[in-house]
Length: 608
Image (cartoon, rainbow, N blue to C red; front, top):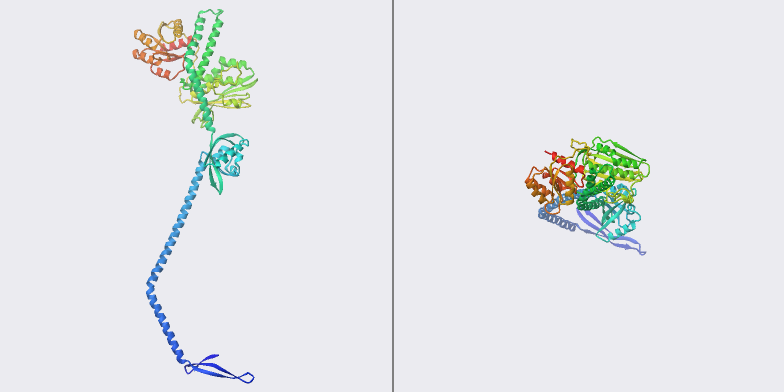
C-alpha cells in the first residue's frame, strides 16, 4: 500500500513495509517507510516535456514537408471525383439515349410487322399457342388481334388438314428456314383459302417459337385461272384464224350461190325451200366461225358511241327474242333501263351477241315458270371483284341480267367462260362458245364481267366505261330495201381462189357491174397499169406472192385515186387496219351475201 504526500513543495511516498504480529498471529502494528521522490518527479517531468517538444517539432517538420504533396493529392482526389460525376452523368445520358433508341427500334419493328402485307404469326414451338398476330393475318382470317392471340394454331386449320400441317411444322423446327406450299387456312365463318408459309425459329417472350410469314394465294390463284383461260382462248383464236379464211371462202359459195339461184327462180318453184335451207345452214355455220373469230384475242372491232337503250329495245323486237319467248311461255322477261348515261363505245353487232347469249342462257336456266330481268344503271367504281381483276376507277354503265333458275353448280362455275365448255345435253342449243364469246367481247370493249349464283338464281353483271364522246349515234336500219344496182361501173376482183373469183364476178354482174378478175397481187398490178377501174376488191390473204396489204400499197403507188375495198375471211385485224390507213375505203367480211356485197360496193363508189 502506497500513498503520495506533498510536504513543503516536495513529494514523498509513504509505504507500509512490515506488519508486526503478537503470539496469536494477530497484527499489533506496522512499520512505514517514507521516501523523498521530488528529484525523480522533476527529472521525469523534464524528460516528458522534452519528448513532447521533440514530438511537436517533428510533427511540425513533417507537416511542412508533407503539406505540398497532400494538397496535390487532395486536388487529384477532387478532380477524380468530378470526373467520376461527369462520367456518371454521361453514362446516364447514354443509357437514356440507348433506351430511347431501343424503344424507337421496337416501335419501328412493330410498325413493320403491323404494316406488312404478309400475314405474320408467332406461335409456341411445342404447344402451338399464338403469341402474336399482325393485322394482315387478322384480315385474312377474319379475327381481331386479341381473338387470334388467345387461339391455337389448330384453330385456324381444318381438322382434316391439321395432322399433315403439324408434321410440316415439326419438320420446320429442324430447319433454319422452312417453306410450306398451298397450306389450307380456315377463316372465321368456315371458308378456306390457301397460302404459302415461310417459317423460322425465334425466341419470343422467353419461349422457343416459330415465326410464320403467310402469303395469301387467293389473288395468285385467280390470276393463274385467268391466265389459263386466256391461253385457252388464244389457242382457240389461233385455230380459228388458221381455218377461218378457207372455211369462210367455202361458206361464201354455200350462202351466195343459193341466193343467186333464188333470184332467178319463181316464188312457187319446188327447189326454193331446199335452197333456202342450204343458205340458212351456211349462215348458221358462218355465225359459228364468226364466234370463233370473236374469241380470238387481239381482234380489232370498230367501236363508235352508241346509246345502249335503243340497242336493247331493238333486241326485244328481234326474231331471236320472239322465238325465245315463244318457246318459253311461262317465263316473264322484264327490262329496266334506268341508267341516266347509257352511251358507250361499242360495236352494235357484238353487243347484240352479248344480249342474245346471256338472255338465252337465262331463259334456258329456268325449268318451268320463272323470271328474267335485264336492267341498266350507272355506277361509280373504285374496285369491282370479277374474273378479270380490278376495274380502273371511273363512271360505268352496269348491265345486269338476272334469272330465277336453280343456279350454276360450283364445279361448273370456274369453267363457264372456257371455250367449248357446255353443260347442255348433246343435241340441245349451244356450241359451248357463247359465254367465251361474251367474255371476249366484254374485254374488247374495255369492260368487265362477273357472275353470282345460288339456289335462287344467277346474276351476270357487266360494266362498260361510259363514253366521253358527246356525239352518240343511233343505229340505222340495215335492211335490204336499198337499190344496190350498179351503173355499169368497172370493178376488178383480186383473189387467189378461182371459185371465189367466179362467184363474186357473177354476183356483181347480176348487179349490173362490169367485172374483171386477177388471181394474184402481181397480176392485179399488171391489169391496173393497163386499165382504169372504178373500184378494186382485194382479198387480204393470198397464198403466193404479195399479200392484200402489199397489193393495196402498190396499187395506190401506181394510181393513187383508185378506190379499194378489202374482202377477207379473217376478222378485222391489225393487217386490215394498216390497209385501211394506206387508202382502202372499207372492209367486207366473208362469207358475204349479195346484199352485203352490193351495199359495200355502192357505198365505196359514192365516196368522193
